[in-house]
Image (cartoon, rainbow, N blue to C red; front, top):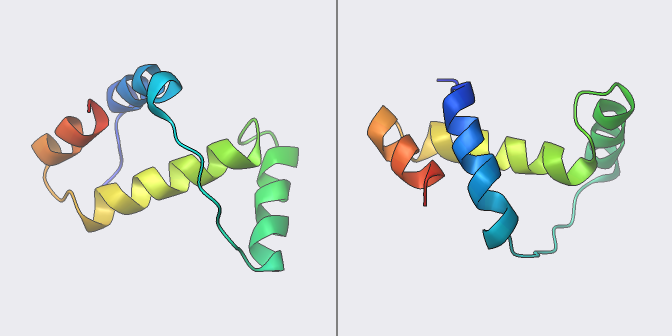
Length: 75
């Protein structure tokens, strides 16, 4: 299930004021892959690529129905 552009817009507005810093240890191949995505212009930086990946993981694994996703993205 993909997140719609409207739902992404909700996240973008909320994220700026509610982000927290966490530390994540990743294997080197993951880091190189993230750097490639940034170099390709798919994401502005590694942090944004990770945020999108986590958002998509949570949407797929925890919030199977549309209303759950919308409630999460607007929180």
